[in-house]
Amino acid sequence: MRMLTRIALAFAAVAVVTTAVAVAAAAQPRGGEARPVDKRFEVQITDEMIRHSRIEDTLYFAGTAWTAAMLLLLLLTPASRAMRDAAARVTQRPFVRDMLYVVMLIVALGLLTFPLTYYGDFVVPHQFALTDQTFGAWMGEMLKGLGIALALFAPIGALALVAVRNVRRWWLVLWACSIPVIVFMVIITPVVLDPMFNKFEPLKDQVLKAKLLDLASRAGIERGRVYQSDKSKQTKTMNAYVTGLGPTARIVMWDTLLQKMDHDEVLAVMGHEMGHYVLLHIWKGLGVSLAISFFVFLLGQKLGERGLSRWGARWNLTSLGDPAAAPWLLLVFFVLGFLVTPIGAAYSRHVEHESDIFSLELTHLNEPMATAFVKLAENSKRDPNPNPLMEYWCYSHPPIGKRIRFALEYPRGAR
Image 1 (cartoon, one colour):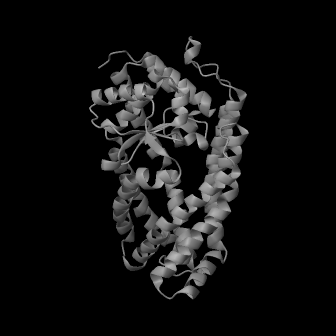
Image 2 (cartoon, one colour):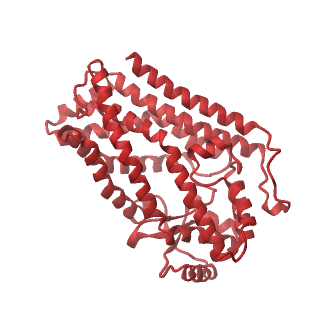
Image 3 (cartoon, one colour):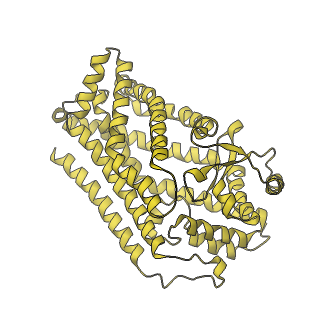
């Protein structure tokens, strides 16, 4: 038990130290950075923006450490075994019992992590005037998300436990089965899951729609599906993204973006999103994710079994296939996922940069792209020049300060 405690303390220490470094670096003066002369291309960095960025960065690491601690709590106390026994009293059918256990586990984790979720997702956005959503509306969406998670992951979790109990190299089975599950989720998300939270409809601005269709045609995208969503009911921030696969593939713009950007800025942003589509970034991203998860699953089984052989007797567990061992397996995979985060983040920054280049070559709207980035930074109240540690560890996009400079320096008509 001492060794397990040391592991937990070491993991928490890494999170605390990393957070402290992030906060300290964010507080340093920024005298050495080159700034555009034209004020249109300069993000007005305020104390509020820096404070918001510090809170978000701290919450990232604090949330990671807290979730790991809650999994340990469920493992080291009788809680997990009590949930397993409660499910067994309801039914003797192993699969149904496992589903009931997974339901209780998801609910328990949701309750244990709720304080940080409430602070990060509700209090902080209101504190920085990034939303007008009421607590009732926010809580309703949280409960809806919980219901979706239960419906999806109860059977998936139960099937995973069946594999762990009955297959020697269960890591390979779980990895292989994750492929169709992930593809299926990507396909149904824009047409089944997303509409449960927002309304999606064809672009209303006919002038802008004509420009976007022309841009899509020049990009080689025929019958482009471009939608707008009523995201303003949840946030004041702006975004656009590519989602779906095959028949459900589409580009989505939040209504907040359409309200706050002019046509050229929207075209520059959408050129970026079209780049993701044309360059097959969703498919490539799936490939990279599966390559990373291959090694995560492999190491997960090895570490899970080693930990059980060493501490299983103290936990009153004899098999990883025992539902009560799920917190241990989840903790192992959670920590491994955290440690490989920089790999996925680095790849994501790479493809985002590729899409920036695609947009600039397609549209030649260098200055509108730069002003769009300025608006994105100021509107989200996030530091456009984060410290290198945060960028390296978890930034999925290049920092906006770098993207602004790149857009202005990239030669027009480079293609």
